Structure formats: structure tokens, C-alpha cells
Amino acid sequence: MKNLTLSLDDETYRQARIAAAERGTSVSALVRDYLQTFTRASSAAPDHRVALFAALDQAGTFRAADRLNRNEAHARRPA
Image (cartoon, rainbow, N blue to C red; front, side, top):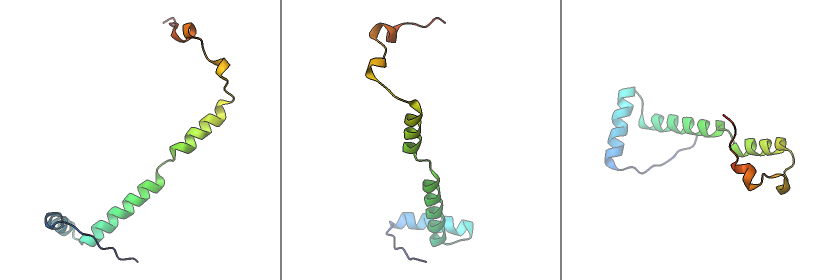
């Protein structure tokens, strides 16, 4: 296990000690739990780039000539 040194202002440290005491734990344990939760959440977060490139792969080919002209783009669809 690694040690970590933090610098906090007095009021933040005081509030952290109160929160830890209310939970029956230590400030060190609170920080450890927070960092573990934080790192789990960020590693479980989906990589949106993967989804984007997968969608692009499924989209097939695209040619500029396939685009709509101005009138087609602004035509209203029947409701």
C-alpha cells in the first residue's frame, strides 16, 4: 500500500475529521474510499469514441454527391 500526503486548509481538515468521526472511521479511510470510488467510476465509464467509430463503421460509404440539395433539405415533410 502506498502513502499519500495531502495539504488541506484547517477548516477543510476540521470538517473531514468531523465527517470521519460521525461515520466511525478516519480521514485517511474517507479519502481512500473516495479515491477507490472515483477510479472505479472513471474506469467503468464508456469510451464514447469507440461508440462513435462503431457507428461510423456501420454507416457505410458516404459521398458528398449523395447529399440533399438546398430545396430537398428545406422541404417540409407532411405531418
